[in-house]
Image 1 (cartoon, rainbow, N blue to C red):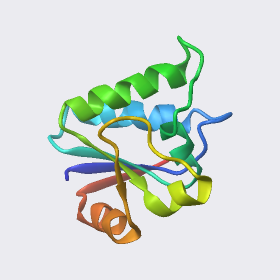
Image 2: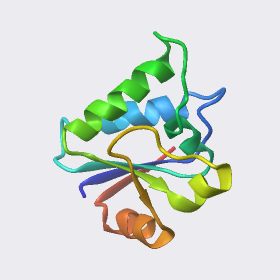
Image 3: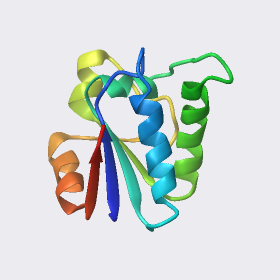
Length: 114
């Protein structure tokens, strides 16, 4: 993987999740393989959040689906999902254990943390 964007902050009252998605999409201009890893409270964004149409978060979640459709990877930390009773509602999001998340981070040429 050329770059991995790791986001851990809650999508509520913060733009970090939306900005992380925007950064990952922007990196596609320069690199072939980009991933986003949702961990901690950021997994709330993947669990069927229904933000008001036209908001930054609504647009960002739509972009996650497009990001996946372009062959890019979206990962969700299993422990974070389990601790929050969150099941990713976006098709194509891969729930991974700690070992696979650590492997993704260690093998990425560039890591952006949010």
